[in-house]
Amino acid sequence: MSKQLLYLILFGLVFSCTKHSQIADLEIPSSLPKFEILVNNDEAFDGYIFLRKIESPGAQFMINSEGQIVWYQISDTTILRVFTPNDRSYIALYTNKDIHEITYDGDTLLTLSYGDGGFDKILHHEIIKDRNNHILALTKEIIRIDLSELGGKQLDTIKTDGIIRLSETGQKLWSWSLEQVMDPLKYPEINRFKNDWGHANALAVDDDGHYLISWRDFNQVWKINNESGEIIWKYGAETIKRAHDKIYHPHCIHRNLDGDYMVFDNGMADIRRSSRAVMFNRFGDSIRNTLIIELPDSLFTVRQGSVYQFAEDRFLFSSTMRKILTITNRQGDILWLAKSDHAFYRAYYLDKAILTR
Image 1 (tube, rainbow, N blue to C red):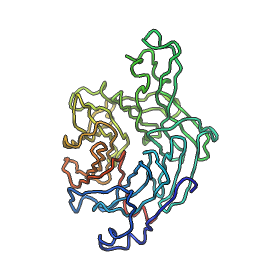
Image 2 (tube, one colour):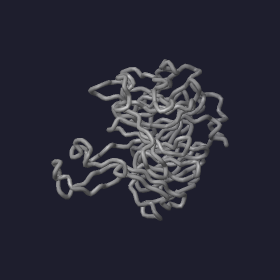
Image 3 (tube, rainbow, N blue to C red):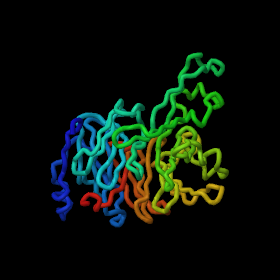
Image 4 (cartoon, rainbow, N blue to C red):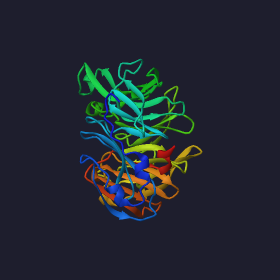
């Protein structure tokens, strides 16, 4: 790779080991994070947790249930926190202008840079691939506007978010911006929020191909038509009646193994200082919660964070601001908990078989 120095622990060397001490004896760079396992139910999981360290030197790595690093790739500089694993590779933002797809063996499958083809947007918070191998990302959008009647300037700027769909060669196939579906001049206190209107933080593809997007500052999840850009439905603070069911600063929207929509509900410092997983689905014309998994208040993370279901009764959480990774069952019982010296934007579970395909 031109922009990364890859240091690989070969899978065969690691996976042939039968004793944890042998893995621990492998030479691991001192720059990689350390983990202290505080809870470890032996049946919690038998795969690996895939993480990304962004401080220089940046790194991708996997740990086992003992908190031992079994695979890693080290970059030659800082990297952005955004990455998503696939069957044989992961796709990531090296910077907000550079997209890389790299196999777990260290081969570069894809490199796209801002300015190539139709790649004309600065990216942030999400990078994924759809079923057609098109690349989807959240974008930074700039709106030039007159806000003088709302307390701003006549020649003012609103910074917000959008979506871009690129081909594997970097050609822009489709793009969308919040401005297409909301009039900023009708948004309450737009002058106050003009430097970060909405704050989109996650993007996913629904089963029918349309897009799911979560908005931190709207406290909402939207489904967006992948052609017209129209809003298909909204779910969030304004649409939920019961106070206990309301979501605040949601992150990490996606469909889980049960087929439900799932978000990491951060909570909010002045309303509910606790974080949790919230699952919901559509029933006819209505949307309602199907399951809530509460985390202890000690794992409250006011920003960032993730949750993914990786088995029928297993859910992996990243409490970013606490530097803690947790696995629970449906009842919220903590089966595994690891404390690190680094904070992780997201944590993904990978089955061992993914590395031997």
